Image (cartoon, rainbow, N blue to C red; front, top):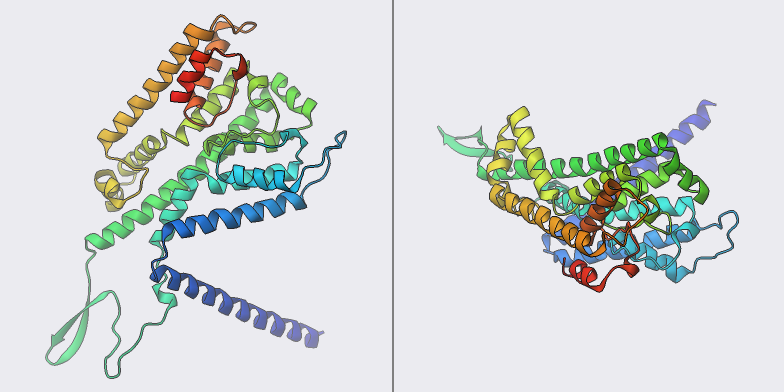
Length: 377
């Protein structure tokens, strides 16, 4: 018994050492490419192409017909859906209800990793990582190698070192790392809390849950799918009718409206508010730096506070204009629902014209004038 155990541990150690060596070699190659200043466009293009291909393969592997459905999804349609989900284009070439529950989870992953908020946060986080330790530094003969974080002083003919105080560059790196963690944490928190809220809504409201049961959709999958799609502004839903069938569920529409806004035009506003709250609750130098000079880090979603106020005013103003136009042109044509539900559904449609592209109404029956307003927005 001990003989076999020792052989297994020896084999496991060799395989682990081999994997560790290959991983280090891969990181060295990645650092070398970064050192060669590979254009960010090429890296982003490689990211989207590789993830799209992996998503397509996963969609093909997880394809199986639903009970009562004989529809077979073509490979080109699945590849189109993979690219569409990753790029948040809201374009579907198949009936969503023909896809399996496993394929919905693949789309959830694609929408999440392709969302602008998540992708920008991960990009910022990778910019903070230091890969220089993976590549050995050249050593000149006769020149001693000194630590990176020290200054050199010559005292009495002997070489001594003293710690270097954190300068502006060090504070910038610390603040950038803090910003990356804040952005990534905000993205994860919104998706988690949003999914729990949508799931709780379907558990509490029997009429909404009945719609999913009639379509054979899983409540957990639908809740996570809806939240990720709305936050990433992708506009996909597991059902064919989008949000038209939930037009009278005002509580659900309010949740999705919030998720759409914080994932798009109000994302910089929310990020600024989170930084302000961190500075007040946890006073640290990096939090104060982000509040005062965070817009100087080059992160495209963090603005000066004055620009953030202007962004909030413009986002609210454009939405109000669309809601007013909806009231003038289509209020009487929408019948069968109460004033409050009609208002919430109209607000939902107005928000989506500039963001996710989700629908609470059939746009084909809207007047051309209102469609022109949506196009402009």
